[in-house]
Length: 47
Image 1 (tube, rainbow, N blue to C red):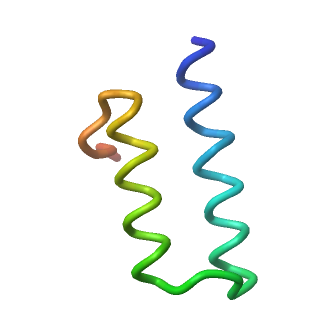
Image 2 (cartoon, rainbow, N blue to C red):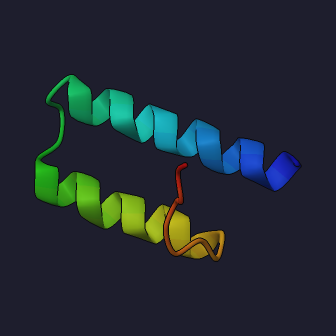
């Protein structure tokens, strides 16, 4: 569960940075991909 929490925290911070327009959408997408790849996550599935 620890790795999932770390991933969630990093993505939350990245989302906050993007939401506050401190980075572009392209930078957000690239950073999100790198973070998710480092945790071996390809995509999120929602119900």
